[in-house]
Image (cartoon, rainbow, N blue to C red; front, side):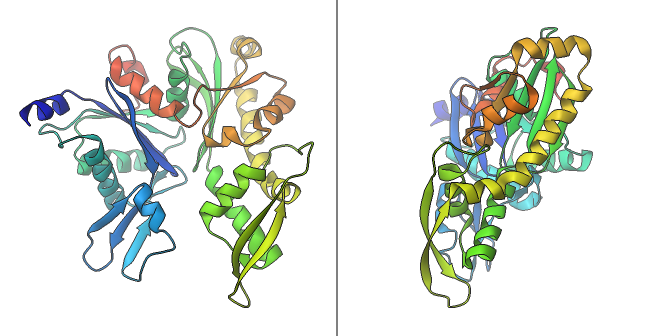
Amino acid sequence: MLGRMLDALAKDVAMDLGTANTLIYLKGKGVVLDEPSMISIDEDTGRVLAVGNEAKNLAGRHGRHMRIVRPLRDGVIHDIDIASQMIRQFLSLVFTRLPFSRPKMVIAVPTGVTSIEKRAVLEAADMAGAGRVHLIEEPMAAAIGNGLPVDQPMGHMVVDIGGGTTEVAVISMFTTVCSESLRVAGDRANLSIIDYVQHRHHMVISESLAEAIKMKIGSAIPLGKRLAVKIKGKDIFSGMIKTITVTDQEIHEVLKPQLKAMLEAVKRTLYKVPPDLASDLAINGIWLAGGGALLKGMPELLERVTGLSVKLTGEPLRSVAQGAGAVTERFDFYQHIFLN
């Protein structure tokens, strides 16, 4: 037992605290946790009942005395107390025993985070049992996670489409030269699909079903072949369960406003790029990360709009966590990128 605790003492932690999912990287081991950023709480006692996948599985199936909470909204902490409980529960899953001393932690945050929102992250991590906490920007973490030489005098552009935010940044010499942070991303797209199905087909569906529809038949550009999916939901008038068919054309139209906003953020960032770095981008192109990178046709859409080559990072869903984790492996080398 003492050996396990001493082992825990030596482990620094990195965290991608996302609106949709939380990933934890343990120094020397890699990504050891990837679960939904959700927690289930007993309304009467305040006791934590479930976290992550277990909490997600309870969504829509729980009783009156249970509350399912997502403590992050639009990429930032909305409820500090609940967020700290969620982080603590996740850490208890990672460590065989919670360490006696507080682990040093690196947490990735959106580029557009305010000072108040930064303090919320620091406070939640402190309440969860973290020691010294270092904040880094998500696009910087994604670049590092993909092995880009962020220390070199060469420009690299990253577009990270997560659940809560879309992050666009040009990076050079450990610095974010210019960036845009847009609170329009995967979750907003899911809600748009829910609204569309409700108003067009008079049916209520869950957010998880909306996500599944988006990834199965959704697209950033019109597809060459027609796709359709049958879905079941609750009729808003009769209350009965019914089945409808939704097509890729419908979902593409629903996603257009979000896609337009993301493209405008990319164009604004490119407009701000200094000439010397612009020539670098012509060579290096754009690196696409986050769950939104997996939407059909997203790389092709960005290429059409920008004229630059677009490449997916090695593991789009894990790039930020892997980059934050790489920082724990080389703290001294990356000390210039910390926000606090």
